[in-house]
Structures are given as C-alpha cells and as structure tokens.
Image 1: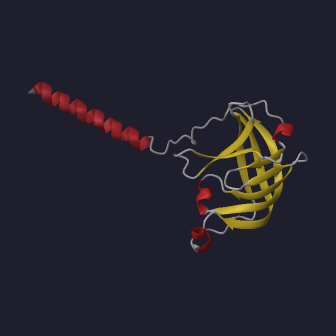
Image 2: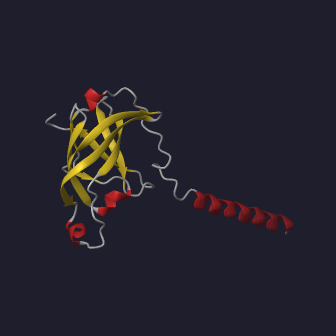
Image 3: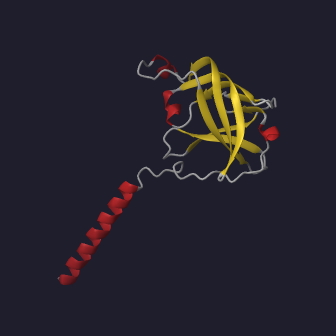
Length: 169
C-alpha cells in the first residue's frame, strides 16, 4: 500500500507542476519570443517600390523615404479594430540584431475604411488614429525574393500580414 500512495503523491506533484507551467507559459506565443528573420542583406533600393497584400492593401515606398499607403490595416491588436488607413508618410530600413525591418509611419491620413460593415457601424469601435507606425520584418521567400510582414491580432496565434512585391513595381 505504501508504494501506491507514494506513486499517487508523485502523480499529484507532477500534475501540480504541469498546471503551474501551463499558467506561466499561457501567454508565451510566437510573437513574444520572435527574434527576427536573420535577413541583413536587403538594401533600401531593393525595398523601394510597390508592395501589396491579398486584401487590396497597397504601399509605395519611394526612394526618397516618403510613402503612399492605401488600405493598410493595424498591427498587432489594432488589427481587430477593423480600420484600414490610407495616406502619406515616411519609411526607413532598419537593421537590428534579429534582422532588418521597414519602419513605416503614416503622417497624413487621407482616408479611413473598414474591413467589414459590422465594424463601420459599431459605436464601441475606437476612433482610427490620424497617425500610425508599423514595423514590417524583412524576409526572403524560397526564390530569394524579398517580402515584408508584421504580426496581427492576438500575438499568441502568430498571424502574419504579408506584403509582396506589387505587380506594377
């Protein structure tokens, strides 16, 4: 009998440890520990040009550091507010330990749209920002073509908003 109760005690201790670990790692999604793409070879000339997303988003990054944005959604949890911003701004290519990122800033909003009719009429939806900043990670696909992306929605899920070279670039 003593061996059975010892086994139950170990089982209870192991179960308790598992419960504590589950609580401690519950919010440890992929974004929180994302260390970058490791891409360090992109140039500003390669980044400049038109970028698009399947949702109709279009961003033009001009060589002089200015930008045109059309229907760009919010990053991280802001995506869930449903607004899409258009306007003008600035951009720069930054290089951090984890890789390169394009820092894009909307400085003059010209239009706000909604991703869905429900968010357009929902009075509890926060007012869309008049200025906004995004950080797009720079990565390369299997053909060594540059792509830009950021995370959106709940960071634990790891959804990516991918921009690829526009067809008119």
